[in-house]
Image (cartoon, rainbow, N blue to C red):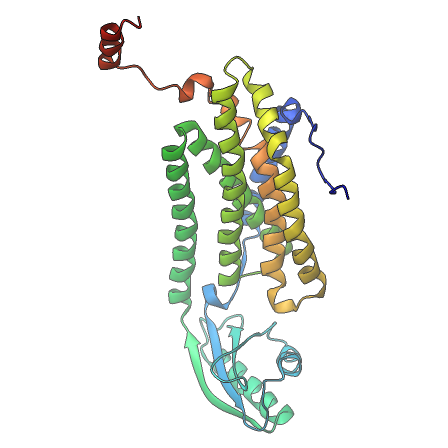
Length: 325
């Protein structure tokens, strides 16, 4: 039985022919994403803006009725609650953003907490309120800054690694590709105003890893071909390298997208933002490996000579001694 191949062995798509238009489009999308983040901002979650956390135990139940509890709290008009089981299956934490104006009037936060706990006790008589904790907005702001710093340092460290493993041009290409992916993801959250919390930071770190993995596979093949085909023009060599890794790229991306699309439409709302971020990341990560990371090597003057060892004076002396020159 003949195996099904999504990409035929003789595939020869001229990706680099359209490198300039695609680069222009990508740069414009990055600029639009940054503008959205600056103008509309991100809809920061409790993790980053502070809020109230209510801990409760359902004494007569084996597990927390998350759906009913989310509906009960959501009806109060304070926004969507973040529910998380911890400890035993019948224990839950309920995190809520601070209501508008709570920074100036702390009583508003206490009023919100009182209404939520009263509604929980009324709807679920077996619910025991174990405690109420306040999350400082200042501490949450520091957490946001730390999270963004972690993303930036991760991208820089990855670029340094690629620089050491390949050449400096490859490090710059990888950094630009990762910046492209992260910027478009932030633009999505600024445009849709989906909640941006620590789960989304984890999703962005995940897509950085995916995009990097895809980029390294393409770069490794480019390096091999630069050593093998020294007289081939660089654009043609890059096309050859991308086509040779295309089958692996498509199979890997489709495998992940099948699961992610199912989660996107059938999964719970609480992980929708996380799933949406990774789903977009698969698309932009695959795209950037082909149209961001590869074409930039042309403008950075990568050639077959980039991987030819530099001959030192000692090498020349040894050749003279052996009569090879």
